[in-house]
Image (cartoon, rainbow, N blue to C red; front, side, top):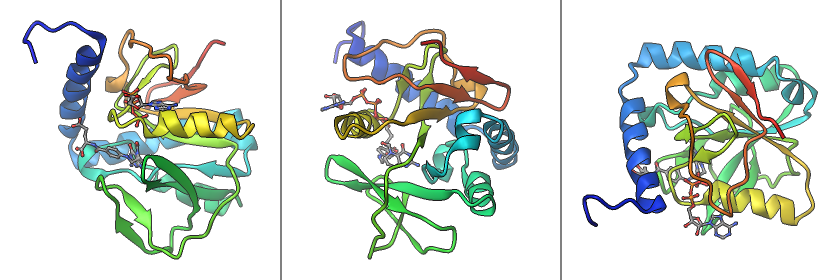
Length: 199
Ligand SMILES: Nc1nc2c(c(=O)[nH]1)N(C=O)[C@@H](CNc1ccc(C(=O)N[C@@H](CCC(=O)O)C(=O)O)cc1)CN2
Ligand SMILES: Nc1ncnc2c1ncn2[C@@H]1O[C@H](COP(=O)(O)OP(=O)(O)OP(=O)(O)O)[C@@H](O)[C@H]1O
């Protein structure tokens, strides 16, 4: 690749690497503390409050993705069903999850429930991991396209849902390039604020 390459994909890739590296610098205490604040903000989002089934990711700790363990506990205490994504080839499946379930390491270091899996109904809310995000709801992930394809699958199935992105304030950028396959997030929650996306 050229050094002064300025095509959109390589700009995305540069930004992705920078944001991943920056987030990994969070120390464990700060990561825990900020994740708790993100969770508390989420508990006040009406879409979340009203949902009966929340799909969330299980954070990859070394990557310092916003931790979701407090959200799992909260859902279990308030009677919400919880599910997590499961990588199967190029797609994500929805698998039921309870905090007592045994986990194994997936292909990318993410935690996944051990088979046999309990297939799940579809969620009203999809709590989405992001590498970077802007205030219009555009998101950047790890670049494998799993969530993009998953959102397209849900839409294809005629399923209505809202996508809520969890991010640390440091992951907010002023503007992200948009690709035709990107579905914008409906809301972004950080340790500092709840950002409803204008439609
Ligand atoms: N916690 C979590 N679970 C998830 C995702 C996620 O982003 N986070 N996914 C979201 O798709 C799916 C799994 N796909 C993933 C794809 C890539 C990487 C990842 O860490 N990739 C690179 C970093 C990218 C890079 O350096 O360019 C790595 O392995 O270090 C993680 C999960 C479903 N489960
Ligand atoms: N709906 C879709 N159908 C088929 N391929 C798709 C779809 N959405 C995305 N892709 C493919 O996935 C690749 C990665 O997309 P992108 O760079 O936007 O990933 P990302 O948003 O960073 O990752 P992720 O969605 O996993 O968090 C793209 O090259 C694209 O070809």
